[in-house]
Length: 167
Image 1 (cartoon, rainbow, N blue to C red):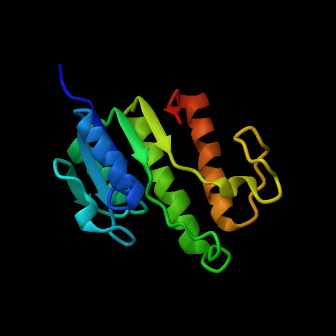
Image 2: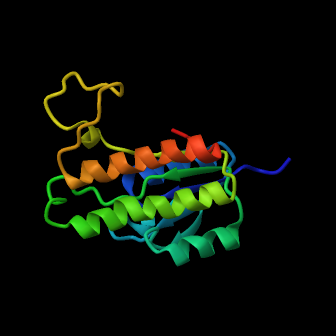
């Protein structure tokens, strides 16, 4: 029986490195991706195959999937968290948080990944909806929340059209 192969983006960040570490403990083959713009190389757990790249670069993403083949599960944690700044860096926000995600979703569909795990944000719900639960109607108030919600919508469409399971 072959080991399940997983991709973890944002693997040099705090959460991504812990996710990668836990997956390694479970005996999975982990490919850890990060552009090191906010994470640290020292966070990549031993045993993970590290690839430094920007998921917003579609050629790099396509090359990664060409070289690595199919991933059973894609854990997409790479993002530029700029809730307070996103009004002022719209292009950067959307490039990193939407285009990067879409590049990965495209490959997940093409290679028939079993599941795409996406880390969204409470920012998709806006403010003044308390207590916040996932059954609230999204009402993002800044470009960061809009970007995260756009990816959620795209994942829903990929599920409906292509059967890509997602969390």
